[in-house]
Length: 106
Image (cartoon, rainbow, N blue to C red; front, top):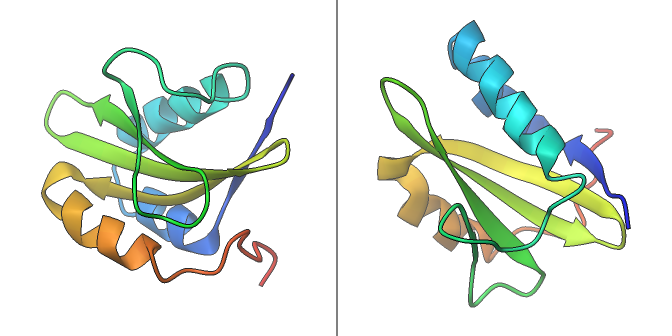
């Protein structure tokens, strides 16, 4: 099964705050989710305690470590947030309150 990746407006803002080089690498990582969206090895983990299938993809750049949070609805992967590792716990708490699937066309 092939999936389609969609970015929420919040994820686009998160991404735009990063350097161009890191942006390109993160986009490439998320494109790979289209064929392998489910947990494997240490790179992707399922997030427990959230009402929808939610996962965290770990991304390491040369200068920082990022977490890409995404949810899956049918064959669509919604990139919800892209944050530095230090902000990840705070974001997990906020994911419990979001409406899913998100309306990405606002």
